[in-house]
Image (cartoon, rainbow, N blue to C red; front, side):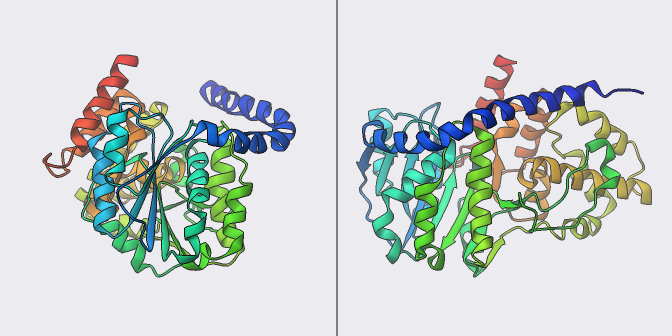
Length: 382
């Protein structure tokens, strides 16, 4: 029997940190959050900005390891044009210059240690505006893990137009995953009842009915933040999405994935082949699977079906925004490009840069320059 050693190694690498976290968690559950809240005033720095809060407030969490970037300011300008009052939460200390720059385009700037990752920041931001919640029309929750590639406000308008109590840009874990080499076995049965179903937390709109529910603030007060990405996703991203579902609030994504097979099948042979060639395979081990699919005749039924199932399997495994940026730019209207793809293999980074050539030319749009900087940084550390 042939053992897939890479798969065994991957599963062991995933399992060990989870085991250690599980063993330590009972004690940390009792002590971590109370101790953090006791120390929080000393750990945080709050600066009042020049703007006044309006009926729509937006939490914008940043991790400015290279300082505040033009794309951060572009997002804030886009929010302000949409009538959203920004609260900037930085999970790193700011320079005096960066703090003043952000304060000029926000009504509050919060600097905090990177405890609990994004959801530690979201929690501190929501608790800081707790007195405003009864009067808000909606709360936007965003972070800088993705570039906003269209700052004209299209996504904000789409989110408002859903009319639901809670809106994300896209959901995850509504589809059961398969190994990429078994992509033909993907069953695209969209299932929001999956216990891990959630809306990706890089862009949320939370409506007034939720904000006015006393349970909303209780959720965030009690949220057990951790210095663990797995627990952060499970308790924060999954936890709040599931809270919304359990309390029977209406919810939707601006870009639903339930009909993705039909949308791919509607593409011409050439367009489907193009989308597949630009599919980002984040795990370099899977590149051979992509090459094998692309070797099939794109006009034949077998070749078309293989391209569709490969795109679906990659979406289920890596996420829609990560795996399919080319499709999103050319055949959809989701204006986000994930920065994490520039931490992947050299081939993935090169393909991501190629896809970015289709973005609007740099004028006020700084995305190309920042992407190139991330690519250089990745090459230097490889």
